Length: 555
Image 1 (cartoon, rainbow, N blue to C red):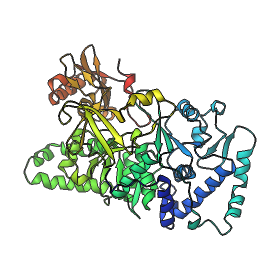
Image 2 (cartoon, helix red, strand yellow):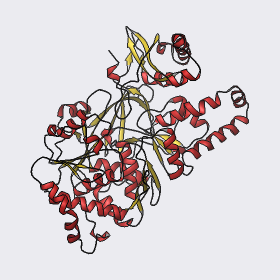
Image 3 (tube, rainbow, N blue to C red):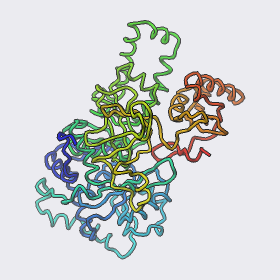
Image 4 (cartoon, rainbow, N blue to C red):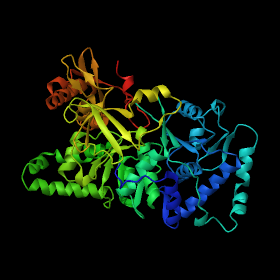
């Protein structure tokens, strides 16, 4: 391990930060405009701690948290881990059956939930919880037995004033003494294989991510962050919440679905110093705004002229930088592979972005490189606190499964020793991702090992690479490449807006998609050519992370 990246105690990081940054703004609600300081946040956390203590909640108890991002969501998460309990964040997009299953499987003592989500939950199916509480209103939604919870809530403010007669001050901040080896969070994956598993993340796993963020100055004291990715997902949690709160950043929580229109408006107003995003956002901006502009006849001609192209590219770069607020150091893309065509264009215009790689099982980060050192088509260098290797006879040239070990690697899957045993080999975590690795630890991803198609001639085909090209084609909204009867087939959900704009009728659909197929086959290797396109009448079913549930469409 690199000595520069000492991993501190996870809970003590926040005890120190809240004291040192007491008067600084901590959390803002973008919709309401309300802001709380680190001191305000610490007081609310202390009140939640008193509530936990008054109902006899033990250290290590599980608290489930299911709701949309909000300052209250952050408070419950931070109060739970600093009390010494285990947080179980649940994506708000999970369906009620999955939410109930996760609450029961995790053996949660309490459930915090948005009122709108609670309306769909059947209370009598919750097997272990003492009660359910509203995230936004802090009131009791359900109590299993007696009135212990309701009484504690009713007396909470009086007890708090008695405990802190001079008011809650920075010198009162004192959080649980817990080893980094203990589990702090159980995060249920929303993978594309159809089964959720509870990833046990220790204080060491979470602090490994946070301390890397601190040491690489992803956020800094007084910096601005706009949180628009789900905080219940490891990526948003680590770098839109945990790292900023560790250094005294000001987080604005979007609290809305980040459509391009809403997101670009918020970015222009908040002007964050770092932008954490998923590929879909950049890909939509490229496909809907940039590509139509540079594809016009006169623009295409101009871009072919030396010197004029660099002038135009610099103009596009400035426009894109301004759209993201204009004051950020870099945009970090993660959560899924970035489309190669989009990535090539962003490099061409010198847009300050980088691509990282991780997984929930690593809380999440495995590799990252600052944008000025970023190698095109890579997923960054392996972190100083992590090791990677490739199961391949020639790891630099022949793709194999990526394996990792180090400070960020999970303890295992909760109550699932079989699944845990399946992903560990001799202390290494098998990621299920295929790729190569350069001598300095830089990773180059190819696709998932489970989705790789092996042809009769022995060629390895990574459908994600073909899909990336197909998704850039006109009239294609999203796609999947599958194998049918020994041939590659493209399942396509059309871009109906584009079809309407260009007045393509239903009768012309087949010929239009045949043109798309022929153009695609010019861009791929001979063994990657698709035999036909099959149109899908509806969008592909997706996980809450917006990944296509591939298993539903392969047979």
